[in-house]
Length: 332
Image (tube, rainbow, N blue to C red):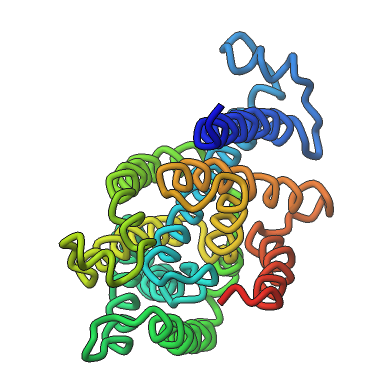
């Protein structure tokens, strides 16, 4: 049997196993907590036949939170994969390039200054992320177009600027900060089914756009000269992919706040498992992102119970060492 056929079968098997692991993680996450719920009770509740306290816990707390973790994790992972294609650098992710901070500034401004406009937070976050991305690309632009290394360096600077603005707003509106503190730490606590259903259509649009960008992302992998020979405008391709990445990251930040390292860690893991072809990397990143954030959120609310540690903190604790590992390996 040809090596290519074996590789395709191996990738399909890995994706199937990842999907099965994700299904197991969903059931486990729904069942775990201060009140443990059996698999039989979960199935009964999902079928609509259950009543009582366990049914209320499942539908009002557990299931909405699990669904939101899946959506946000998928969004951030696909966003990171897109940015890594744009910059040709596995260290790129929405948090490190300033996109998440830009979206956070816009969303936090509404939360603290104009809470009556909270329904506009998703749109404001997308605009804030776009402004941050525009600043990064403007700073990274040179006579030859957009240089990937300059994008990374510009992203660090823009991230620092918006991080400072977040700190300033936290001081100026300190009396209102407790309500936004969980949001700043990337918490999924207190979210209901309405939050999940609100973000799902926005996210689905981003996922579809990402799948339409697969060919362009693979073109970037060929290198600058080869892509130009194929008739691609590299600057335009990078801008299209960047917009999809910014959109997905901003939608996520608007709902749960700052959750770092998902966009960095997950695409790298997916690349190890299924290779660099974006036809496989995007769906694998989507599933793995959902799985990683679900595990992080479940760990945060069960490991230190009754305390509920935000998923953003768990990801920072786990993602920081992984980031250092990538740097140690020379993945720059």
